[in-house]
Length: 164
Image (cartoon, rainbow, N blue to C red):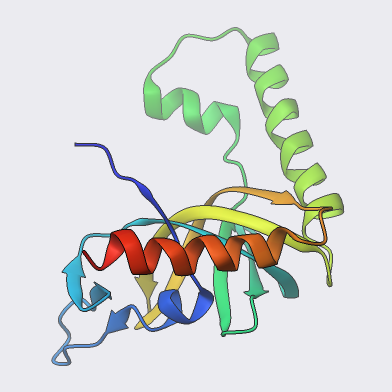
């Protein structure tokens, strides 16, 4: 069974984690149903960015709430090679590392700029009892109507599909 991407609001993502207490793993709830981590699409404005050694977190505000998003920095190709037990030459390993660093560098320099309008897709999960989106893709959106269109689509899908 393939997971579908849910067009949602940041408030739905932020409210999707409930802490059962007693050290148990937090539960994800979407529209009143307990669910496994699910794929979500958000559209909004980048309101904060925090860079750490192994990851970058940022907030996306769609006027309903701010969703915390996480992008892992690329692992070195050498680490990936060991993990997959692949046999790459040194040149192939260096080329893969360069491509990964270049993609991540472009992401930070162009898409994740404060005030930029972005569309984010990723898996909703919980960390320390809070919902966060583990980002699969993020792209800057230049269309001034994109957030309004996303909002209208999400409301229509909520009314006609998700709650049926």
